[in-house]
Image (cartoon, rainbow, N blue to C red; front, top):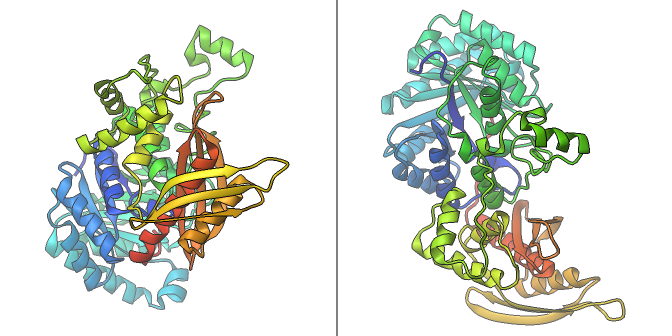
Length: 514
């Protein structure tokens, strides 16, 4: 149990967040994220859905056996096979949690489950009892809870708490609720579930109407003491409640939210950047807390106020979320120790082998750029450490382009260690590069999205390219960065193709989200 004013932070970035289109991660990427979530101070990490695939099972198992502080949760449907599989994945965790769920709204019970309320109640009790036979740390979720009959919700929660659930979750699965009614529903459930004092009430909100954070904060005020969130608010459809928004709302307005958490706010921004790098999902510039413009001030009257007193237009200090202004200048004369020290300050812990890879790329980039900034270093880490296992690698690229010639690209790739090369024309230099890469790799993927952005200011800034590819219903994101935007485009395309290859070999069947 927790004190009445402590809020348990349950992070589902690795499970619900991964359900963002194209955001699937491999085991090494999941383990790196989980490690940083633990350092962030997350209480419960929902590491995945072990019954979905062998890859998901192995990733959850690796996280469970590596982390030493956070509780590790495995999502399971209310079936014996799911729960047994989930327990096998998390049984070696310091504090394993089985998280099982079934829908409780009339709409879902009638049309999706084709079960009566009595059958749903029986299934819920049975699954919780099985989970409780493995661990005392059991969570039950009533999917589509915000559209469920309140009295039936109370009946289900009372029964599963008696069966052994120590946390009961009331999700707003489709983002339908508004803060006032969600607050009242939480109050009603708290008041009318006789044994609620034996369990923690949790909430899990989706952002379909842009109200996920507002609903979560309203639920906290009504008595919920666990919140289910993701970094950057990623997740299926419009995403989930954002961890950083909830935490910084409580941190900035303690008069309204007199609650405590175990989150180290100074690690918020580095973890946000890590998630963006690994998933390839860009953080919109005007996003609250972690967006590039969150602490930017262009209007003259704002700038004048900030210079006189930052509190005139900044309700939070950038340093609070880990946006420290560091005077250390990195360049081509910087050594390995200085680079490693700075990388650690940014929130990354690299092995010697990983540091060697990044340092080699750092020296190469430093020959092209006068000053290396944090965004450049993050791109190097992504390129040298965090990339998917590679079937395809780029050896060289040569492009001929201009308004008096046909754009032509010559490319050499390694495909599973075998060199292949070729040349082809295109409508432009990038189109030509993509045409020849497509031909050499034999891919049948479709390019759904192509985005270019500059990592830093200046004409020597690295260009960052993000692509979204689709093949046979599988969607993958690819990312690449380089001072040469054509090379960055090639790296992003190849990264996306490698992710597609990984997903083909590790197919995942996702459960309906909560």
